[in-house]
Length: 333
Image (cartoon, rainbow, N blue to C red; front, side, top):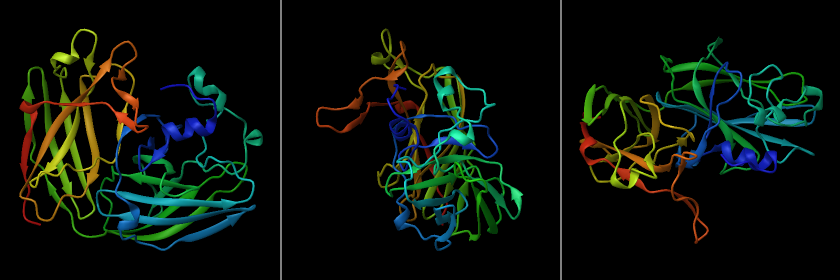
């Protein structure tokens, strides 16, 4: 990840909602930053939400909770911030003074009394009064100014209906903002558990679960082994970790909600749990298409990634591995 000259620029690079999120865990000391490469989240405007906006004001800062959504695969909500003389960035990048952090992040260790007022901290979630322990995403909502979005897709065994409590801290405000909202699951979910494995050379992956709703598709799989390299990915270059596209029976590639990239050598074991856009109406099957990016092992950056001559951001070329493709039948919904 390249260094930036301001906290605002840094924020936009590593905490982009509806593009890429910082992964967080409820109860974690600090978020794990990922470098965004490509993604497309479902537009919240097209989704039916389970509640209207709730608004709370403290010490000149107003927070509004909205866009609450739950369909069995994804729980999400947004928080809009209003007030005077607030910082440009919305998400707090301050790190607890007792956190373990690298030298490059220690500049974000600032005592509470010296922090700028108005940054939104990572929320704490309660489900029916009990702490919700889940990994999720939290960051600026690109499509709406002064708004953050939180999203969780490792939901465990949440009931179809529950009361969600969202406790949100704001820098230089002593008490958290506390929202309580009833949540009800939207639509029906079809869950397929094929436990099917595809192998090429030393690499294999096993699809554990495919969850399908009218809004979201969730893919859960485990992979193991050395990722196969194309002729271009030898010598000076190498393959990245394995990524997975989902293509429906009409040939449409589903949009993955976030695609994160860590600038380091890929591991040989991964547990993948990712969200994609909805599948078309009543598909008979979907095809999993594994692919890699070509990377430069000197810094593990993606070859071809960056701003192109046309001014648009390029993500780098995908290298698909045909022999690893897998077709999964989908039962009637």
